[in-house]
Structure formats: C-alpha cells, structure tokens
Image 1 (cartoon, rainbow, N blue to C red):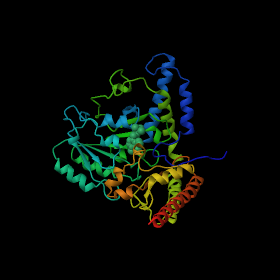
Image 2: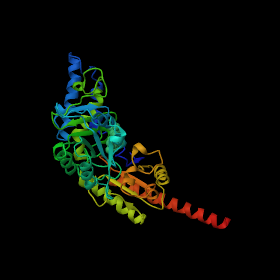
Image 3: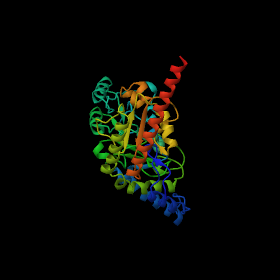
Image 4: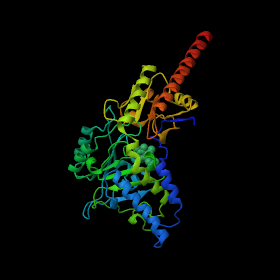
Length: 395
Ligand code: PLP
C-alpha cells in the first residue's frame, strides 16, 4: 500500500503501537469496574495491575509505588506540591527550582506560589547549568527545595545530567522530580540510576494512548498528602475516579515492547542521515544541542533565512509532518522558551524546526523528508527572489 504521509513528530505524540492497540481492544471487551469484587471487576483489576508491573519495569520502579494518572501534566501537578511528604517530621517544601527549559506543565509551578519558583539557567548547549544550580542551593540554604529536571528535552532532545543534579539537591536536603516523558522508551531510563525521587511518564509519547500517564515514587517515604482529585479511593487514594482500564492496558503493552522498536543505533543513524542532507541543502542551518548527548530520535535546527511556519506548511503540503518547537506551543507563533534559555536569538528561534523520529520511522521516511525539504527550500528561495525583483522593478 503506498504511504500517503510521512510522520516525523513523535515527540508531540507517537502513533499507537500495534501491541497497545490490541491490548486496548481486548480491555474494551471487559465490562467490569476494577473496584468491584465480582469476576468482571477482578478481570479489570488484573489488567490494571499487569499494566502497572509493565510500566514500572520500563523505568525500574516499584509497581507498588507507581500510580496511574490522566497524563504527565496531571502527574506533574500532583508532584509539584509543597505538602509532598518525605517523612512525618519534614516541613513542607518552600521552593521549586525548575530548569529553564522544562515543559510548561512544570514551569506553571502548580501549588508553589510564583515567588517561590526559581528558574535555573541552561547552558548554551541546553543542559542545566550545574553551577547555577549550586549557586541557587547556596542562596536558599536552609530552605526545603524541590528541583524539577527533565530527563530529556522535548524540543532539542538534549539529555540532562539528572544524577549529578540529584546529588547536589540531595546534599542540600531536597528532592528531584524528573519529567521522563520524552526519554522513557527512547533511551535507558532508570529511576535509581537517575537518582530521582519522583519520575513522571506519559503513555502517548511511547506508543501508548493519549490521556494516561504515571507517577513513580523512588521510596516508600514519599507520600502525597493532597491528592489532586478527591473522591473514591482509587490508586490507593492518590487519584480518585474509575480507572480508564483500556488506556492503562494500552500503556502497559506499549511499555512492554517500545525499547526494541526504538533501537538507539537505528534511530540515531536515520537522524544523522537526515541532518547531513539538511546541511547539504541549506548550509546556514544551525543545529541545537548537537554537541551534547541527545535523544537519538530528535533533531532541532533553524535557518536565519527561512521562517519555520512557512517551511512547516510547505512540508505539510508535501505530506510530511514535523513541528516548530514543542507541540503544546505550536499554533502560537512564539519563539521557544527552550531556545531562548539557550541564548538563541529571537530571529533564529523563529526559524526552528523539530524533527522527531520514532518506532515506525524508516529510511524511506528520511528519503521522503529530504525530497520534500529540498522542494520547500527551493520554493521559499524562489518566492524571495521574485519578491526582490518586484521591489526592484517597482523602484
Ligand atoms: N513533559 C514533556 C517533556 C512533554 O513533552 C509533555 C507533552 O508534550 C508533557 C510533559 C505533558 O504530557 P501529557 O500530554 O501526558 O500531559
């Protein structure tokens, strides 16, 4: 069957994996409410608990400390709470430190008052500036700190030094909340190796369905004192509301199979070939985060001479889906806060394009992208030339 579209926007959302779809269909055949004690209820409960084991395994978490939510946004809102308990005696968290390139779900700060949210600078490479983190920890010595740091950035793919940051925060008596939404499934992402206290996941970024995520706690000492949703005692009181069994089952199935699909060497090979082609077609391309460790699937670049929105539309017409900056902010023609935090000028950031490959990306996709890209660049240059000539002849 001929392929009509080339989808290279996996960081916005990944297509549903066949195993996830099959698990969801099967779960939809289950009528039971997982809280019911009869056979139907028990069958639904079994699907949820199997999925919990599968999701927890993906990140080396304890299933008993893994809770399902409606997505990463909800999980982050649950985590970013001053009253998160670490022990009976501990006082509430007083400040949230958030790396400047975090997702808006983090930067919003949730229950922390805006004056208690301190952004931590990024380096020009896109990693958290560890010396700025140290300085902030010294400045606020004696206060209880929660640091939010992504495992990898959604726009640039830059992998953050989470374990180093965790060591610094722990030495100061704080905790680290890691948004692993973009890293999980694409690279090794292990709660203990990261040194995070809390890890947040989203199913639809790793081939599961939209509208389901998870929050994993590193130790039994951590406890949520203020659930976001009050009501029934589902998810051991952490999240009230009847569970979305099909979505949870799809999340579990995707977690189970995603790693071999996203083979790092294969994806990095495709990404590197694409970047080489972009460079040969547009010599003035600037690649972001290329000098540090990046996710193997992500490429973010810009041209001073080409506007991303125009390029994006031309590529879309040619059947290629890519993004300009993060999905949550696409539609708004606003330069990315991530690139701004890396010191990229506003003009250059306006031209930023993000390509994100994934589990079903092939060499043919890269080839189709390159053909469409060449055509789009030619169109933009021709238009510009015509405009210049029109201005000249009107003068
Ligand atoms: N964190 C990151 C890094 C993301 O890329 C996203 C989604 O774009 C989120 C959090 C929010 O995830 P969800 O769509 O599950 O709420």
